[in-house]
Length: 123
Image (cartoon, rainbow, N blue to C red; front, side, top):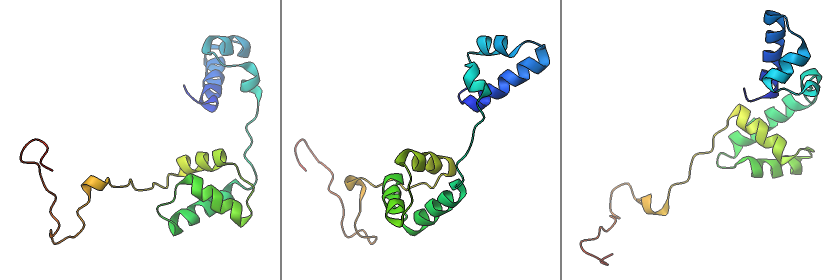
């Protein structure tokens, strides 16, 4: 059980099925009672911000969440980099990994062949 929402659901299920008090269920499952009673609320502009992040990610394919955050701030959004990262991880626009310089073969017709060592200290 990782998230508070999942622990909250487990406490509710235990109190229903085993007919125990909320206090006892929270104590057994390691959930704080204040966390159990707090109602989660999402910001009003979450959907619009998510759509804007996805649009920017489609437009700039190699950008990560940090640069997308800078672009959002330039557009006038008041958003935190941690909030953008949370949305980024949830929605999952993946940035392709960079190739290492060693792995590059510059031309497709294999005119640039990487040298391989024939002996110690050759290449």
